[in-house]
Length: 161
Image 1 (cartoon, rainbow, N blue to C red):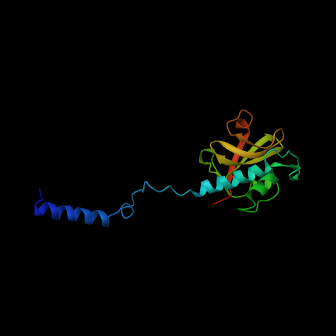
Image 2: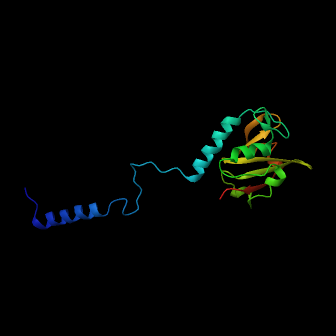
């Protein structure tokens, strides 16, 4: 059984058009490739890599070493590959752009008021979590909605663009 001439011509036309208008030419996703990681994915990986180096390091007010570190020095160390941060929490709180809690992105500094005269800083890593140097647990990851941290949340700053 043979195809009528007009069917063959139509089929040839469709095959030609399909080859011209490939998925990439139409900006359709190619289901055979994996999506490229986003900048926030790379930043989170970098922050978690730094966390792995410092995890469990004891808290030491004024400390800047693996034998003991405070929260603002930890932020300096964690961000060293990306930017230079000032030494104190008070100075770090003046850096970058103020962002609302509902606008947090990976890499934003999050600030807490532990008491009227004590400030604390950590770095947001997504999923309501942040890396910081805790007085009780040393360098650790905590949640923003933790019963201790939630009422002490003060503000956030975007220091990376």
